[in-house]
Image 1 (tube, rainbow over the protein chains, first blue to last red):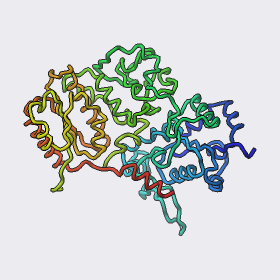
Image 2: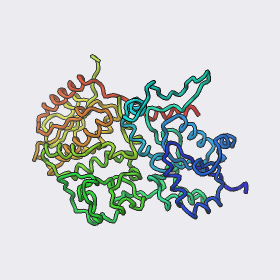
Image 3: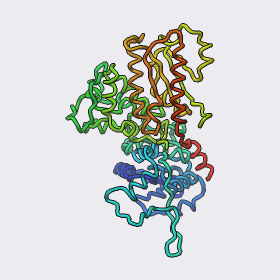
Image 4: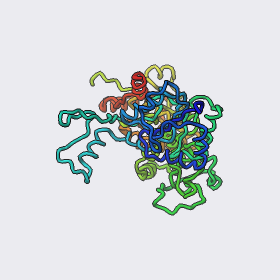
Length: 321
Length: 145
């Protein structure tokens, strides 16, 4: 009993979808629970952080951490689990890349606070209260986690041993990752436990792609009725498949949605967005300067589109102010 | 601000720019000059890397319209630049910091003029805004443990 490896599953800045993905292993979760001793899983079980603090360093075999780091609480929990764990697995797009909350890096902490506590039309805040890390109430000091200037991916805060991207990661990759840890058959530290190829390489629609894509117009998925069998890019709909790692099982394509990039860049690439810019440029059929401007101006929020899941790990990280 | 010297990176295609000039002599006069074969070779990542490494502006000199040795490399470069400008503005980097000129200058004299002109623009704009590098934040966070 005492020899079962200890596993912690924890969320930082997270929506809970990654924890849901673990539950989606269905019966396999029970086998995992047989093989390991789950000692922390805030979303599902009633263990406390002080239980973890009482452990010896490196006593946890594996910590599966999902969610991004935006405040001092996230940072503290991440640091605690790192100290107590032999292996840390960054689980899901937020932990690996910053995730959708990472798009907040295109705005500033000040703008976020102004909108949320002052300017949004639904806000009623006559005293202009804004949360502070420390405040005095009735002579007592109350504390809140400090909200940081930007969103961080997990490996920008602690050392990470393995990465499993996806929003959320698919059950087959989760199962093979957990099995690899249990069997001790792990790739070199720092590996991403997902295929190396780009999504286009595994996409069923790839065979409908013409030899050269020449777009006269760019459309968004809600503006057209997309053909369910044809390459999105060939239809003029932006799809991040060429610059995104495969392994998701093409779940979006199967419901007729283009790739949004949740698996992050392919192996060997750090910044998928600039790679996609180069690819997209070559697909635009516009030799005339005016025509280039017209096509580019048609794209709303290019940065948000290219870095929907990965702004904090992009080359330029965040907005300069 | 008066003594601010902008860091400009200039890429120029060898097919139209300065191929008759003494390259070593020209290089001595232009800091961060990268002569290349075809402006279409410049990946979006090269331009972003320049900014990541502290450049205040990037100037690309490509061949005249219709004169690309490889058919459309200069057009490809121009499309990338327009896409990148839009992208960079979301990071708080002004669009004027990336410029592309499609023209020809075998003697290489115009390269100097273009570099001077853009350097003056950048001088007026001031240095590109900086962020605290993530690696430093990371180091600080790790040092706490």
